[in-house]
Length: 108
Image (cartoon, rainbow, N blue to C red):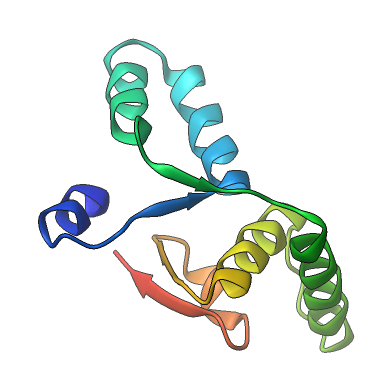
Protein backbone atom coordinates (compact mmCIF):
# COMPACT_ATOMS: atom_id res chain seq x y z
CA UNK A 1 0.00 0.00 0.00
CA UNK A 2 1.14 3.53 -0.74
CA UNK A 3 0.66 4.60 2.90
CA UNK A 4 3.09 1.91 4.04
CA UNK A 5 5.69 3.17 1.53
CA UNK A 6 5.24 6.73 2.78
CA UNK A 7 5.63 5.53 6.36
CA UNK A 8 8.88 3.80 5.49
CA UNK A 9 10.16 7.03 3.93
CA UNK A 10 9.41 8.91 7.18
CA UNK A 11 7.02 11.30 5.45
CA UNK A 12 4.15 12.75 7.43
CA UNK A 13 0.94 11.20 6.20
CA UNK A 14 -2.28 13.01 6.99
CA UNK A 15 -5.75 12.13 5.84
CA UNK A 16 -8.34 14.70 4.74
CA UNK A 17 -11.51 14.03 6.74
CA UNK A 18 -13.67 13.57 3.60
CA UNK A 19 -11.17 11.03 2.21
CA UNK A 20 -11.19 9.14 5.49
CA UNK A 21 -14.99 8.92 5.38
CA UNK A 22 -14.88 7.61 1.81
CA UNK A 23 -12.15 5.08 2.68
CA UNK A 24 -13.98 3.83 5.77
CA UNK A 25 -17.26 3.53 3.87
CA UNK A 26 -15.63 0.95 1.62
CA UNK A 27 -13.85 -0.74 4.52
CA UNK A 28 -17.00 -1.12 6.62
CA UNK A 29 -18.91 -2.39 3.59
CA UNK A 30 -16.22 -5.01 2.88
CA UNK A 31 -15.89 -5.94 6.56
CA UNK A 32 -13.76 -8.77 7.88
CA UNK A 33 -10.01 -8.66 7.52
CA UNK A 34 -10.19 -5.74 5.06
CA UNK A 35 -11.91 -3.64 7.70
CA UNK A 36 -9.42 -4.67 10.37
CA UNK A 37 -6.48 -3.77 8.14
CA UNK A 38 -8.08 -0.45 7.17
CA UNK A 39 -8.67 0.51 10.79
CA UNK A 40 -5.10 -0.42 11.63
CA UNK A 41 -3.82 1.67 8.73
CA UNK A 42 -5.63 4.82 9.86
CA UNK A 43 -5.02 4.38 13.60
CA UNK A 44 -2.82 7.13 14.95
CA UNK A 45 -2.84 9.14 11.71
CA UNK A 46 -3.55 12.84 11.78
CA UNK A 47 -6.86 13.77 10.17
CA UNK A 48 -7.14 17.17 8.52
CA UNK A 49 -10.59 18.57 9.30
CA UNK A 50 -12.97 19.92 6.70
CA UNK A 51 -13.83 23.40 7.93
CA UNK A 52 -15.33 26.67 6.72
CA UNK A 53 -12.20 27.64 4.76
CA UNK A 54 -12.25 24.26 3.01
CA UNK A 55 -15.94 24.79 2.22
CA UNK A 56 -15.18 28.11 0.56
CA UNK A 57 -12.38 26.57 -1.50
CA UNK A 58 -14.51 23.56 -2.49
CA UNK A 59 -17.42 25.72 -3.59
CA UNK A 60 -15.22 28.01 -5.66
CA UNK A 61 -13.34 25.06 -7.15
CA UNK A 62 -16.50 23.29 -8.30
CA UNK A 63 -17.98 26.49 -9.72
CA UNK A 64 -14.77 27.29 -11.62
CA UNK A 65 -14.55 23.79 -13.08
CA UNK A 66 -18.25 23.73 -13.94
CA UNK A 67 -17.77 27.01 -15.79
CA UNK A 68 -15.21 25.20 -17.95
CA UNK A 69 -17.51 22.24 -18.55
CA UNK A 70 -15.73 19.94 -16.09
CA UNK A 71 -17.87 18.00 -13.62
CA UNK A 72 -16.37 17.29 -10.20
CA UNK A 73 -18.20 15.32 -7.51
CA UNK A 74 -18.66 17.27 -4.28
CA UNK A 75 -16.72 14.68 -2.26
CA UNK A 76 -13.73 15.08 -4.61
CA UNK A 77 -13.97 18.87 -4.28
CA UNK A 78 -13.99 18.48 -0.49
CA UNK A 79 -10.92 16.25 -0.56
CA UNK A 80 -9.09 18.54 -2.99
CA UNK A 81 -9.91 21.68 -1.02
CA UNK A 82 -8.53 20.13 2.17
CA UNK A 83 -5.27 19.26 0.40
CA UNK A 84 -5.05 22.66 -1.30
CA UNK A 85 -5.57 24.47 2.00
CA UNK A 86 -2.76 22.48 3.60
CA UNK A 87 -0.44 22.98 0.59
CA UNK A 88 0.00 19.21 0.58
CA UNK A 89 0.25 16.46 -2.01
CA UNK A 90 -2.72 14.23 -2.66
CA UNK A 91 -1.70 10.59 -3.04
CA UNK A 92 -4.48 8.87 -4.96
CA UNK A 93 -5.31 6.24 -7.51
CA UNK A 94 -8.08 8.45 -8.92
CA UNK A 95 -6.81 10.12 -12.11
CA UNK A 96 -9.76 12.53 -12.00
CA UNK A 97 -7.89 14.67 -9.47
CA UNK A 98 -5.29 15.50 -12.14
CA UNK A 99 -7.73 17.92 -13.78
CA UNK A 100 -7.85 20.18 -10.72
CA UNK A 101 -5.65 23.25 -11.26
CA UNK A 102 -3.03 23.84 -8.59
CA UNK A 103 -3.55 20.48 -6.89
CA UNK A 104 -0.33 18.52 -6.40
CA UNK A 105 -1.14 14.87 -7.12
CA UNK A 106 0.98 11.75 -6.79
CA UNK A 107 -0.56 8.70 -8.42
CA UNK A 108 -0.14 5.14 -7.27
